[in-house]
Image (cartoon, rainbow, N blue to C red; front, top):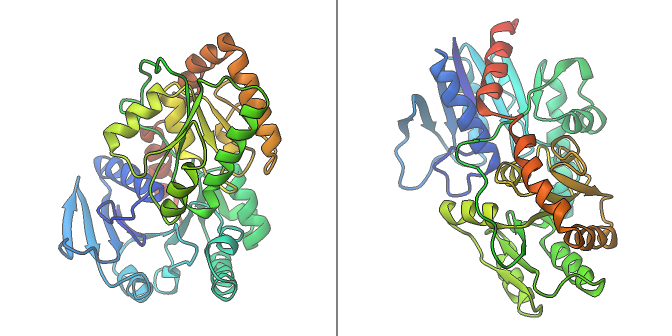
Length: 356
């Protein structure tokens, strides 16, 4: 079997994120199952146009815009094609290869309203709706499936849910810090709502949260300069910016509680990483987080936008240290339900059953 993956970025791209991590972990395991995998993405400065990574052939052509022209041309040369729609606009490889399916990481209809100017947001939203022309679609969660049906008008029977996984060897529990802290570790982007985390933390303090509890924020992105300025106004809040992978693992293991303030999450990889590290999450009940978080087991969900509700939940969690410590243990057990091997096997079976 031979598969072409089309995605804007590959693992070496400086802006590679969760989507690229998902594709890489799945692709390298498909290679071990005998699938010949090629990954087409935009060019990366300082990297060759072609190289190999763990058996995956990386092919780089064009830029963010012109890759959409290269995709259909390359697609016709391959047996099966997966258009990875990680950045809203589909590649439309089905125009030249009938054996094409889409992997929709999350639906962007609401996100682009906050990330782009009104005219560009309108154009991207219309382009994303072209996803309804794919005959087969894979999504990571039931929530994303519902969004794809409601917002993109993709017929439900075309969609298959294949949950993403977690590296359970890499993400594992460790010793908690002596001084309690809440961790917000995400990209500093508008849809991640970093300033809402600060607002919820300050409200929790006003409601009686112990003064020794700190809020530690980490992650680079567009809002990094504004975030650095904002934290200067708040005692007990620290912003570390972009951190190394080693520091990320240390933070996830030592944090007492993880915080997610995103208004959209197709899956919720960061929450799963925290859970595997023995750290429960308080999050808004949006998208895939409804699938990933079991209330009271590996976290707690609050209604989206309810900052007071989030603050109350923070105070409640830290008021019952026994329950919090039990959640540290149950968080890991919940994460153990997910693995990249299982994800890859489901993908492999999906590819074998494809009728083109």
